[in-house]
Every structure is written in structure tokens, then in C-alpha cells.
Length: 239
Image 1 (tube, one colour):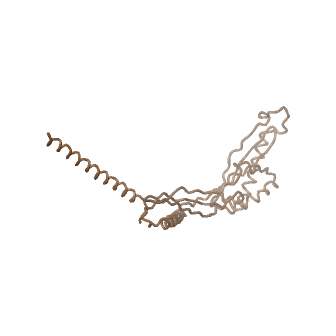
Image 2 (image 1 turned 180 degrees about the vertical axis):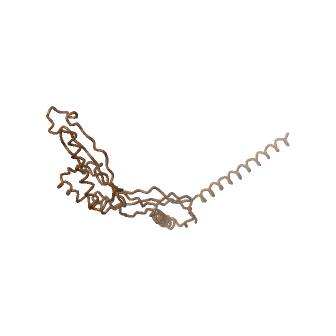
Image 3 (image 1 turned 120 degrees about the vertical axis):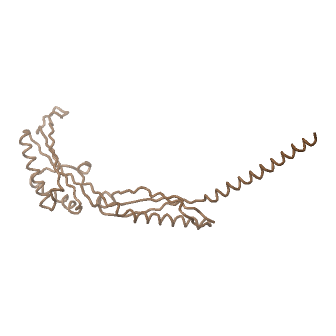
């Protein structure tokens, strides 16, 4: 009976020692894992100012009248004047596209009982798409010449469809340089953190290039663009 009890106590003692040592090993394993997993996340910024290389200019004009046939004749005349103006200033046929005119019956759309002086309004758009941004900027400032020839230009700053749209399409040419700069700046930030924490910077664990953004520098110079990217890099830390 005593032998059986002794064996039971011995087995329990061995089990307890085994659990203790196993628990200690597990604890050491977790600590070592966390030490190996010590990381620092750093973000690097790269910004570049570029000039737009594409301009889209919707040149809108209109005619008013009571005779649809006469109205279309006037629109046809205005269109020829506009196209001649654009070509005379250096634009090609490939850069100019014409949209069919739209006719609005103002009498039918009137919400008041007041008589409408001109029943019909014809709208037309000549769209210019060009890589010559400087030329487009110059022509926009000279479009008052069309009004001197009897063309009624429409559109204002609150009508986005009539504003010249400037784009930068050469992102792929500057991407590598900007990503390299952003990554370099991220490493500088990580190195500073490692130095402050009495550590050394290790290898890269993961890196995220981030999204590129292209925005106008300001409202007054929409042909100048700010290109921006933020890269996120996670580095290992070493003692």
C-alpha cells in the first residue's frame, strides 16, 4: 500500500517538475519571439512640383433666336469662326473636336408667365485637347477676340464643365525617383528612432509604396501640380 502511494507521489512530483520546466521553456520561447519580432514602422514622404503636360479646353458659345433654321446657320457661322481662330493660333485638326449643337425651347421650359424674348437657345461646344499647355493658356486669355467677331462665349468659374482641365500624365517617368526618395526618408526616420532607443536598424520586414496623389498647387495656377507619395516601411530592430 505504501509502495503504491509512494509511486503516486513520485509520479505527481515528476509531472509537476515537467510542467514547471515546460512552462519556463514556453515563457522563454515567447520572450525570444517578441525580441526577434521587435520592429519600428517609419513613413517617408516625397513631393515634387511638376508642370501639366495636357490641357482639355471646352470652348462654349451660344446663339439666341426665334427661328430654328436661322439659329443653326448662326451656330454654323460661329463654329467656323472658332475653329479658324484655333487653327490660326497653331492648333491642328487632331486637337479640335466638335459636338453637335443642342437646341433649348425656353418658352417650354419657362416657369413664369413672363414672355420670353427669344424662344430658342442653341448651345455648342468646341473641345480642344492638346499637349501644348502654354499655347492653351495663351489662347484662353485671347478668347475675347472671338467675342469681337460676334461669338458669344459662355461659362464662368462656377461652371466646372467650362473650365480648362490641366493634367500631368508623366507619373510613370518620375515614380522610381520619388519612391527611392520616400524610402530613403523613411530609413532616416527609422535610424533616428533606433538610435534614440539604443538599438540598431535591421532589415526591412515589409514595405508599402503608398498611393500617389496629383493635385493643383493652388487655384490660381492649376497648370502646376504637386505630386506626393508616402511610403510605409517596417524595419527589424537589433540590440
